[in-house]
Image (cartoon, rainbow, N blue to C red; front, side):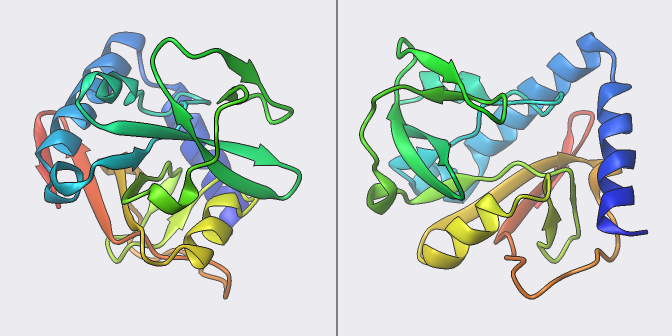
Length: 179
């Protein structure tokens, strides 16, 4: 399968999740992220604002950490400070982003990266714009983690030179997880 075919298939599968199952999986994702050593050790964490039926991990904002959300400006992505009561605006990519908050890329210790599909060795497929790949490439010292449902794991993904690996993958199946 091509990356495009994988994206279409995975989006179809995610949209097919019933709302109560999606909520259950999102809550499990948060529990397993909180139990992960990378998260426990990090003081400054980059999250994502969920789109297209991604797992909603925003309840992590209740933890005693500093959180940042990505903001895309033209072809670059930077992480901006975010607190629960901050104003979010919808970007041209239809993603909610912090408004007027400072860029804090250099303070990040961990990024939780969204994915449509992953391989167990850490390759991922996103939406195809390469924002996370570019950011990870230029900030190689920052740890990366992704959390997916078991149907999002593919044995071998098509990989291109610009694709960046995620350091660790949490795979959820019901209440179980696998690091």
